[in-house]
Image (cartoon, rainbow, N blue to C red):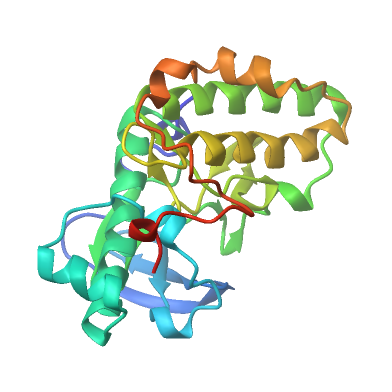
Length: 261
């Protein structure tokens, strides 16, 4: 079931409103997420406002693997990023934010179970708050699913991954830590490291790592997982990775100069 089934069609306050921050939900290595109340004339909608830290303040800076071929910028920006100038850091930050926002919008439009996107900001974006009242939904890593439920959720997540592959996307950092558990459903989050299958040289390795990382949670709960079968079952066959470069790997191996900071 897609994410729109978790939210009524009129869930978002429209017309005249004011936004009020209620506090920090989460502070991570690359961003902070704030709870925001969007107050209208007759009701209030809760939103999550994700604001990215400046690149020089992030503990996660080795982003060449994900930045890859995002594009969308000028030659001057690309040169500045390669030289690690201040302007290059600003350009990389803008592309980082744009990549996550664009990925969230595209996944939501494709029917993947994600928080509905609301608005792009200068240093982040607004999306639906996933939780009940002002209490955020827990991460899947914090929930101990019974074996039968774990099997059902694993099968549903494979369906989600199949949709991602069908629109040529790889999450890039998928695990039980980047999935929320809400109303008996798994909700995918955190798309700043999402890449395109047909243009990014590490896409196959990232997808394999996503599946392997996610599988650890479910294998501990009795779900049998065969990674090769999963890849074939979600449509991630060799034809979808025709532009992968053999000398690029996520871990351990040296990347070509053009993909490094």
